[in-house]
Length: 221
Length: 240
Image 1 (cartoon, rainbow over the protein chains, first blue to last red):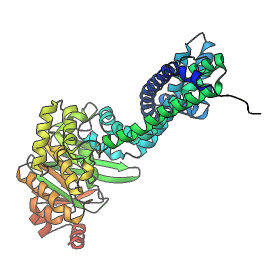
Image 2: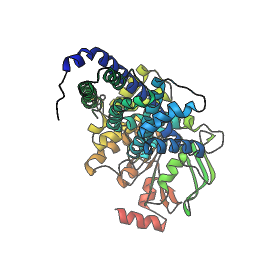
Image 3: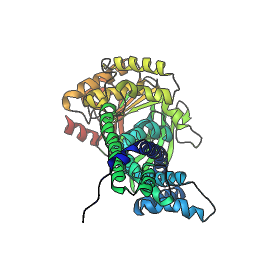
Image 4: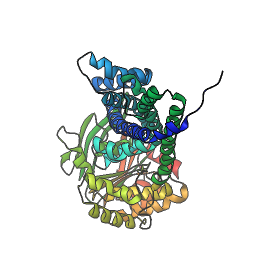
């Protein structure tokens, strides 16, 4: 029988707390992306380096990040490393877990993007006297990041959504964690999570729309 | 001066340069003609060290290009090269294309580099395209931009590798005019080309390559007027 009566007022009263949680979620996603992109560029360079050890490390990273559940990755950072005596806070565990996942996916995107950049671009840069490193940072990498712009946006959306996996490491300050704590106290699960869902939706929508606008401005060539 | 002594180079089992000897002196315009696969383009990429050689020696102003201790990046500042495919950097404006290596390699200030870029771009007739992205340019304009990009490094030598081969026929003229202008200004140039008329007009000497060998080298009147090598005779008969 359906005899659940909605109590929206109570849930809406907690909106400020939830928005604070949303801000933490955005922070984690942004940080994890900054770290993820940086590492992904390194992994890309490693994979192209020709050094067996470096490319092995990079390939392993990409394989694990892309072929195991994100939940598992975050869990391993928190409890797995705990086994070695490395105890990280829920916040750090979640951040590192998501950054690990981001780096793996982005490195794979970057690899695809590099295929679209002709080898002759590097040759032209080298023939102007640039070193291999200068050619990569000034000619290849900017093009790689532009080609990967939409995949990067997708990963950013994914990073926002992955913060909810913090629940598994007792993260309680992000949007999902705050919402969970509120429902535990009030049992108004549907109302709170419906509001949280709308907040998640608005955040990711803002990201995709502003990315599209930004792309139109940035990539005029 | 560019001195090439007995240079040999193979790609796998295929020997593309079979002992080339050649000296290009300051201010000279040398054009290199020959069928595809004759090794002429490979020679250019060997001169600026983009390709290693198997044996022999190439010296540019006394510096041995393929010696162990040679700073190739430093050497390449002196030797501009422009390829068949112009390779504009698509994410940079025309002016930024010409500025990049000046700033990163020659360590010029942005203002200096911008001024030099503007000067060179005006020189090749692109003074009104500074802030345009290369994607908006025609092939001929992009190729002239690539020439300006190389010239902005103030090179002592310019190498041109079939720079008109990838262009629509109606765009070839503007690029050849740019090369003619450079030649008349006294730039030392090696041009690999299929444009026989151009080779005849601008060259001090013309070299004919065939299957990795420099079969004949002579001033244009002589090489085109009275070719001695039978392969050259066949080649000229086929291209005229």
